[in-house]
Image (tube, rainbow, N blue to C red):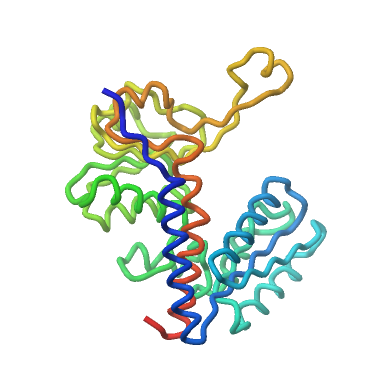
Length: 295
């Protein structure tokens, strides 16, 4: 058998189109959602990501504001900017692009963002609300993964799900969302015993460990849904290109093996990745509605 390839790019396009329609409706009621992104330093990957966020935010009809700060910015100066954005009624979503320079404390920055504007879903208030089954702004990547799963599988109730990875950004919120969907959930990690056997019991495997092609094809239960969150650069398969530093993108799942066993699988690239910014736009829209008191 060969798995159905889950086209995250196509789904993200449809989601952005729906967000744009909803933004247009909200603007007719006098509210224009505003997203502020703060970038500290000159990290090349972060600059590309921030530019893409800005372009897609504006394409959806929202206000996009980007603050680019030098790497030597103090944490106090950054927190003062966050406080200013918290108080700005035109801004409904605030995102500080990570990583930040080493002299800054990420936890303190996240804690300073108003939970109502925390479109990354990392503030402990939102994490606690998610864990308690209450409405919360949810981290974008897990939210996107759930959308893809529901689109492919429909009702997830009763399915066994394994999340490989336990980060605050991905693994933990993913498990909470699966639990809320009435799945039986296991969070696996580097200290889990016999990880392959754990994965083989799962109807859904979400790989978010940050290790290239760690999840092998023989770890997958036949017909299972595999969501690969990993983005890793490895040497090109072409020896000549590899000799000159050529690379290719792979996920945390050995795709060529798993695609022969799974029922559904996300590719890398083109699977989960496109969903992240689309869900950021959806979160900003949600925040704007809640802050404005518009259902």
